[in-house]
Length: 72
Image (cartoon, rainbow, N blue to C red; front, side, top):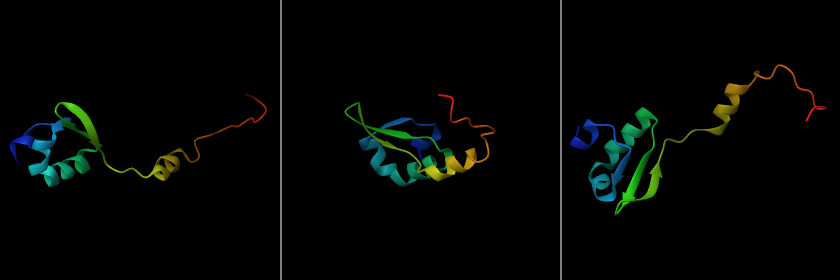
């Protein structure tokens, strides 16, 4: 592990990101936490794990116990 990954990073500059990109991708996949890439201190990109929207809907399946379409 490099010095970048010795601590949890939430933001990183482009110049620090480039030499550690693959390592950072693996860390993002493992932790599930996004990473913000900055350019001259200004946030420009966010890298986050892909989440399938149907997985969230699947988690809610069967959770509605009563539905009354007449009530607003």
